[in-house]
Image (cartoon, rainbow, N blue to C red; front, top):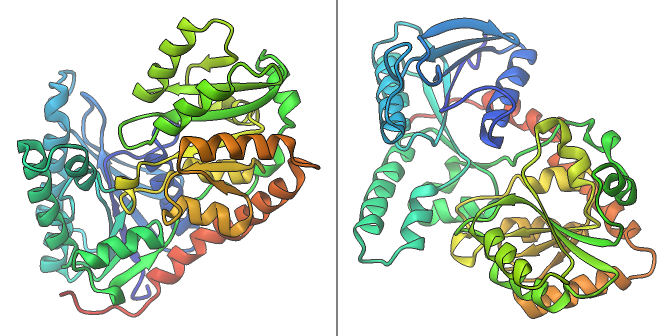
Length: 402
């Protein structure tokens, strides 16, 4: 076995069909196993399930129980109990690993990796896919108890990251933020998220997708997913108010969240507006649903820059959909879209209205943007482009921890 050989991945949930984080976690583990690494996973057994260890897709998956089998525990206790069980497993296991990749949920999970490092010399790789503690602190008044607690926990999280040999972020913007908080740049790596290579073959023309989904025919501006406090929905609301009465244009919101609910209330008061709503669709209907949009919106609040990278962009590029990023130009998603020519950045309501009108009236739409989106997907967002970077990282010479 090589120095890189036995790998442990640790995270909250494992398997497809759930959150994007879980899917990426699963696909990375299986890809590493296919590349001849010996891969094991440590994760949750799920609600009221017993602990178990079994092979799944070439990966040995250890699932730890967070409660007594057959008995449910209060939701507020699920993550703290899971953290305790995962860290406890790392503290007492006799299994030895050359390297461990640790996700950032539950919070402070890196502590379990430190036990592996101290006991067995395991090299630690922190995989920073999201920074919820920083998000919480930025969304609340600076002096509030919630913000103070979040900042305190974030400082502890950063101290744990500084004991890792490598810290992997999703984008340059996030890496710069981590460096500003004390992570040495020599230990930082940037590896983005991905979608499977065959996604473009499932793409449908927007007209066909709308017919399949039973939607009216018109140029469609679409938002899909959750619309929460970290998404800047004010410009989107302004664009809806300005454009929703055009007879040859419609807005489609497929998802939920406060941002969408605000627009839903407005649309109910304006029955002649051309605004459509759909609930989140099952995974098997996802592609047809996304293909309904001629143009897609991806939003991020300015204060959230460096804390996350919306993974929905991978699928949109894979389906050759032009994208308007409602976020500051320096955010990773805006850079990915603008620099590749796959869309435009429109951080304000006025700019968003102008961008929608310009794309709708552009000669030859959507061809130039669709080609650019497809090329960007192949180069930087397809599994075959991203996952080999993980394999190369695991083969890097092992350095001493801080």
